[in-house]
Image (cartoon, rainbow, N blue to C red; front, side, top):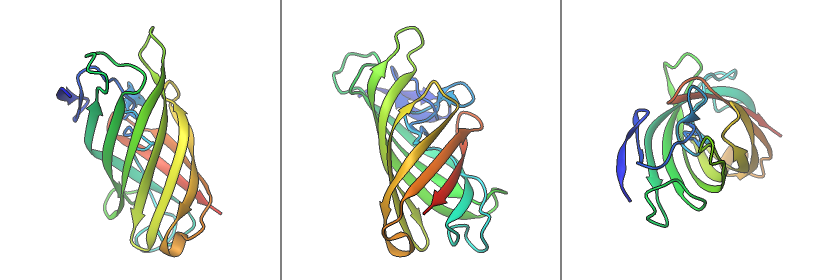
Length: 182
């Protein structure tokens, strides 16, 4: 795996990702420039609930990517199906003044459009908050500036959680994550 600086994070030299996080996530410029995740992963901005922002079942957070690593699984030195993006993000309240948790995810490219190298990827990850964790997974089209992730479960306060996370990229390293937890 060859790594180089790309959009403020460490990524494989052949990976162009949407933030996400990228994400799953920062593949495109401003909401598409970053990591394959992003799932997704990449950014949350404000909690509508009191306290750490994770107390409510419906809140928004600011996600900031702090580490992003691309894996060239076939050693082709090009971005191909099967390549992965692994990232870790910090989650802050909407004002960006208080850390409320973290997000760790992996996105695996399932399709690459050769004209723009913007992938479709399967992303899965964990959001860690003070009162428990949330798991998410989804097939993400990183050509889109906004996408939705399925909440597949959780622990602690979020035991048996379902719902969705809507991700909207703000720039190459930040995104807003809106949590709608059933």
